[in-house]
Image (cartoon, rainbow, N blue to C red):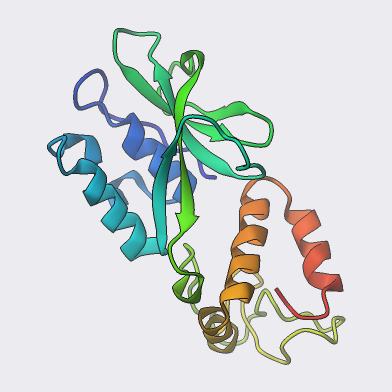
Length: 205
């Protein structure tokens, strides 16, 4: 999660939702549409199409977190600044706000009234931001000279995937789902744990 602040305030076109999406997906604000400006009848379809096309995910509104733990989601509730809703970034494991895009950082009044989690549409075509090819001469994140189970001598920058590893993720739904889970863990502050998991697995994740 990369905190991004909103730039438009108040109802009806405040862009807190846009800023939360940018924060969750670690994008610049300008890379995310302000979906709230679309007509009510189509804005959610616009959001769904964008998430699917860009990440292979769909936004799923829910009233309670339930089984969705160890993930980051978008939560909304009553704004402390008026009779309208406000969106924040929510840690589903700790059940607490981790980013308020409003400069006041006041969050919402009381508990969230509903949440939006992001679920995989089709693991076989999972896309994660930012999977991008590594530069020649750098070390691929999946390759470790001390790990005989890694994919071999592919090279990258230690944060992204080389062509060979990326192709394997695309073709293997289980591997893709595992990789998404580990990357979510990394974004939630568990980089050391994710690194240990990758190191001891029989197959690289």
